[in-house]
Image (cartoon, helix red, strand yellow):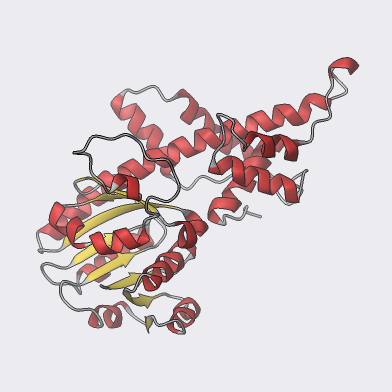
Length: 324
């Protein structure tokens, strides 16, 4: 299939390259021309403007916007929508608020344009590992996109298969789902990121306790000078808490046991806040997720080793760099 991709940051580049490797034709556009020029060397069609990008597509045209949440995405959606025709598909694959998706889908449906929101997880590793995708949109649009989604997804891989009902949607174990109508994809991804905050915080606090066990404030016989890199590594091998986040932690500690590269200032990209807002709307207690978000706020006023763990994990899975 041929698809247009607007926005060639870390994720956008990975998506474009994975689709090209899968045999799809990719038309790209980015404000900074360098990434598009790089992809063009490998066969992508590089364009300078949204108008040129759309002109290189054939009906039903598919445009995937991969930009940061906020006004830049809102402007791109409006700009591209004005260039599309009834039956075309407009995808927001970034981390937009699901309420914005609901509003946009309604407005674009009146023009005959099919809007799809895709919550995309995988970070800088998605090119090689595949992207986990949570898709919101009408069935006909999502079905049209299936060849693209299947190429981007991780596939079955080596993970043991869950005993599922014969009627279960086979796409889930391939790494992508049709979560529901417009907005559902980004809603599921939002909760995914809220859970991510909690998991990361738990690792950070645990390793902070381990590191502090050698404090002079403790009785001498109860102090332990623990090798945190070894602890992280052994936990990867058969323990209940083994995970990709632990893999990233072990890798960071092996390279730099004191994590001196990091200050421990931990940003939040919005989804954690929206998760808590949804919990409030639904009157669902979310003690752990709320505390994890508030700890990120506190990290900006003074840092401990646990927050360095979070910074190391964020750099590992998403290439996120601490603010200076």
